[in-house]
Structures are given as structure tokens and as C-alpha cells.
Image (cartoon, rainbow, N blue to C red; front, side):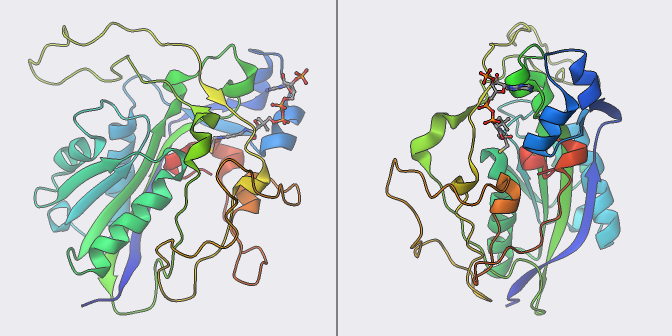
Length: 297
Ligand SMILES: CC(C)(COP(=O)(O)OP(=O)(O)OC[C@H]1O[C@@H](n2cnc3c(N)ncnc32)[C@H](O)[C@@H]1OP(=O)(O)O)[C@@H](O)C(=O)NCCC(=O)NCCS
């Protein structure tokens, strides 16, 4: 049985429309300087009409498969992480599977907020490392702009849209995800709320009527709390072997926040190696905004 899930393909899709901090200065009482210094974001991409998580993911998936030199019919699993799916049902994974022609594949989506892509990568790796599947197409995608209140400066500066995809394949070479540590502090579940979407972003295809779908209209109230750098526990896992989360010595008691750390922005504060030093993190948040499961951050 292959021991590792190697990344053999990758691709992304971001919408063409760029919304810069200077554009936002004209919409709300904010400034490029305020946004950049606090979040690192200079611009973000905004989905156009007809662009949704499923359409963006399809484009990213095709690119990833081309790099991996796999055909859609080779794919064993399509796994999509998103909190802004086209619909609650069907899943974005099922839509991508169909439109890609990945007829042999299993398909499901998972929802884990901004950590979605990481959770999906870990999940798909387990299917491969246990020998269940030979490969998996893992996609992170968000269409967050559809729920943004463009008059609320507290939140509208943060989010963007896009999709990222990788292909994982079984390998005996020690590559890919070498270890992981997943954690969760559910006691702060209300720190970030994205209300349930009521507007169908795409119309059902064929002759299926949209009449039964709710009318357009969004509840206001996307809320984002200040995360604080210390909320990210940031252990790098334990070399070579997957840590399944049992040993978490630095986790604070329930309801108590961790040490606020050294003031680094959340992304930089998150990944630390076993020796406490920061490891390298490739960031696209400056150009893509926080597209959460989409992988921009
Ligand atoms: C955006 C963020 C940096 C703000 O943190 P902060 O600097 O501590 O700012 P605060 O929220 O305390 O607000 C400070 C002031 O700035 C103001 N402010 C908020 N948004 C602003 C904006 N876009 N432009 C200018 N001022 C703004 C607030 O109204 C407040 O003003 P007041 O002091 O007069 O009341 C922080 O909430 C953050 O990092 N959020 C990101 C979380 C995220 O992206 N999550 C999703 C991915 S996981």
C-alpha cells in the first residue's frame, strides 16, 4: 500500500474582475493604507454574472488534471471544500464531477469555513494513504462576494472569490502531506458568521423550474471578529507521521484565548515548526483577499 499522497497537479481560477482598495475607498469610509496595514490585502477578485463555486472549480480542476496528466475518467474522488456552495444540495463536488466527466469518481463537499481547504487536503490524503483510492481531486472554492454588504466597511474589505485545485496521487515517495494537526475551538463559533444564502446563484439547468426556489434577497449581517494572532495554535505536526490531534499541549482551556503572541498577522502567526520557528508560507492574500476555503489565504 502506498504510504503517501503526492501532489501531482495544481490549478486555479480567479474571476477577471479586480476590486482594489482604491475602488473600496469610493464605496465606504476606508483607505488603502488602513486595509493593507491590517490585513495585507491590496485587491481581491469578484465573481461575475454566471460565475459560481461550481464554474470556478471546474476551470481550476481542468487545469490541475492537465498538469497531473490525468483524464477525468481516471479520477477516483472529487472533494470540494466551500462555505458558499451554489446550492446546499446538490453539492459543488457533484456538479464538478458531472461537468468534468469524472464518471468513476465519488464526490462530496465539506464545509469548514476558512480552514476548508486544509481539512479537505487532510481528508483526501487519508483516503489515499489507507489504500481506498489511488487519486483525488481536491478543490477549495469560495464565492463570498455574494453575501457581502458593500456598505459595511468592517467586512466588505476582506473577502474575495476564487477556486484552487490539486490532484493527489498515491506514492511511495515521502512527498505531499507528511503530517498534520487539526484543531478547533468551537466555543468561539460566533466569531465569524456568514448567514445562510437564500439566493440561488445559478439557475437549475434543463426544464427544472426555479419557481420553488426562494426569491432573491440577503439577510444582512456578515460578521467578522478580530481573530488575534494568538488564536492560531500553529504546531507543525510531528515529523513524518500524521498526528491525529490527540496531543495538544499548548491548547488553552475552553473559553480561554491563547497567548496573543507577538502581533504577527494571523497567517504568518499560524505555521510554526517543531522548534518554534516560523516556516515559509506562500501567501496570495494581498492579491486575492480572504477567499477562505479557496486558498487565497
Ligand atoms: C479587519 C481587522 C484587521 C480589524 O481589526 P482592528 O484593527 O483591531 O480593528 P477593529 O475591528 O478593532 O476596528 C478599529 C476601528 O477601525 C474601524 N474600521 C473597521 N473597518 C475599517 C475599514 N475598512 N476602514 C477604516 N476603518 C475601519 C472600526 O470602525 C474601528 O473604529 P472605531 O475605533 O472608531 O470604532 C480584523 O477584524 C481582522 O483581521 N479580520 C479578518 C478576519 C478574517 O479575515 N477572517 C476571514 C478569514 S479566516
